[in-house]
Length: 174
Image (tube, helix red, strand yellow):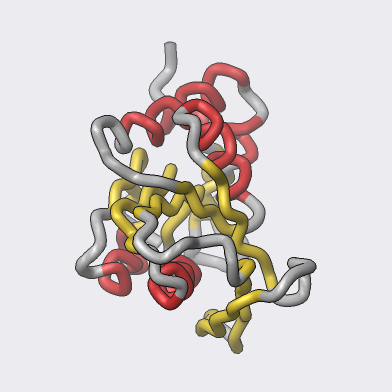
């Protein structure tokens, strides 16, 4: 069987010259690599005491929900502004060009809950940094953050200092 890294399609010069785009859809399109990715991400949670899994749309949903199901945990979605129907808390964060805002339901995290964040990729770390702030604003404690892939050259971990961060696949560049 191939290693998980071999299933990730790398597309040079996308979205701009000099960038190598790491395409997670090639992992999702193959039953073996999809199972391997979920299993290997979940392995990072072995023996960890936690209450809920949080994942940002959309790929955090793809990986977070099956892990939550496997471990009999609740899953809390983080959405783009305006997508959740009940009272929310929101956080704005910086993008390469401009800003974005994410939201969670105000009642999604209970004070004292131990939270794991699951997502497909860490690049600059801005989205996950904003999610950690929302969780803590609601009284939760982030006990682990797990990514399928990490672009080490973008130094996203620096925004997540003080958190337990794990990545299944690490790429040295951007």
